[in-house]
Image (cartoon, one colour):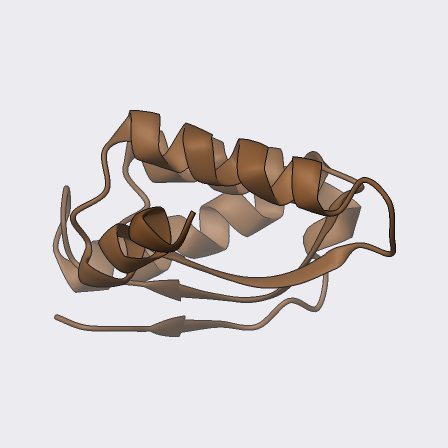
Length: 102
């Protein structure tokens, strides 16, 4: 799991890596309270779907979101992050989001 975290942190994370990370988080938190996480990525299609899954999961508690450039420029990524949080509904209310690396 540490290798996947490093890839996520550098922005070099494939959809398969994102799925593996989500699965690891869910398995790790089955026996306790929700695991607090901060989501980071470029909210194009793959990261947006992963974020929606995280918000829907009772196993994680999203503390914040940072958007970085990637599939889209940073400015559009920050806007997309707001859209994703709106789509996530009640569980995303009040979750702060910020611009990350450009």
